Image (cartoon, rainbow, N blue to C red; front, side):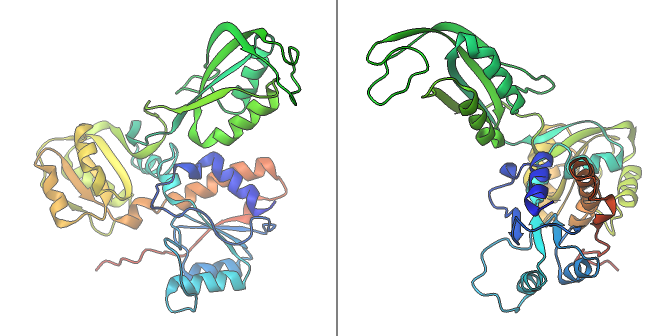
Length: 371
């Protein structure tokens, strides 16, 4: 198994296409064709983590946070980022980061928080825009069914809990093959009329290349006529944050104590208590001040996130509670989930790559300490 195989597994778990524009995800250090010995999964890639990878004979580090956010003009070891990159290269260790691609994934960071807190009925808080595309193609009626199935198999035609979705219109297509053409149907220099089916089908934006390959490989025409548009439809499975519910309502103080214990937070900073019980909970792992208004519009009784500033807490306006549970604390269980997901994917693909070769880092990378 090579690093590219691992990248392909992560594309199934959390497509990098859906990472935020500011982010830097994917293979940051290393050669994608390198054979993988063992994998170390971590929250951050620090020098101690590189040392751990060396000690455990891991030549690929899967990190939630990227060690590189912007370009390096010099690599001479003057800061921890440069030292990590140097040591990784010296020891032939690849570094792959997933970050906001996993934030936006349905089974990602925020689903993990919901799971830890026992929340139910979760929905995406801020659906990511422009994640659904639509393909319109024209195909001879006799080949319509086989082309539809090829597109379905490539990942097109899934809407929410439904698959094999398409819309079909029967009509007549015309064309005339010119000099140099090799028409499948009709004759050169003569207008041909062909009974055709127009197929309309949606697909996830990250699969566009795969869908077009399936189209070209399975369409009978030498020249394939098609159009692709980006839809405004809300994707129910991709986006930042989640809104969910407690099975039973809790008193505010009891809920915050429950969160502090469950998320192992050294401290929870929160806005003024409202006197209401907590039932509806919004969560967004990592820095989530930008989602305060979305949580309010969703009718949350409390919004759990991190990295809030002084004036952010005023935005609660006594309507609900805003709580900062800590950046690391909100994401700390991510690496365990990534190990589980990766293990399931890899053992199905490469049984010889036993579970023991996918390891969870034992280094606590939280830079914040509490008295």
